[in-house]
Amino acid sequence: MTDRTTILVPIRYPLTQQSAHTLRFAAKLAREATAAELVVLHVNLFQTNDKARMSEISQSIVPLLDGVEATVLTRRGFLVEDVILEEAAQTEATTVVVGANQRPTWRKLLSRLTGNEIVVADYLRERLTNVEIVEVNSQGKTPAATTKRGANRSHWNRTVDRATDLD
Image (cartoon, rainbow, N blue to C red; front, top):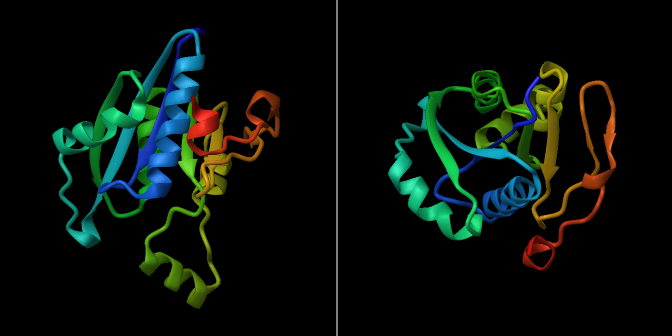
């Protein structure tokens, strides 16, 4: 087993306020870890003909990373959560940092109609073993993070309040 930490952080591009908060928090985790690799993932959705490029994303995230180096990946897919699962496996992620309730509007509407609401963090927790899932809300705060086994990571049980606690 390796002591290396791989942090996967899916984001939306162009960056939303939620994605910026999530990215800052992931960078903070990477800075705090002894040996960490930060992997930033953007999913170009088939249904929206999304075509964001790694170079564009890289330029826009550098100011948010506060000196933390990151690998930027773009992947094409239909369901964001499935692409995240695949990348978590391929990168051997130990931590996945997601924004709370990050779903496209069409999925929110469909969920209301069908009564089948998918929450990305819960979806990932159900399917990823031995991976910490950290959920960051729209105010840049994070609740307690739990693994699939339910182990509580108390050092993530603190509140992250925007830029003040991210420094």
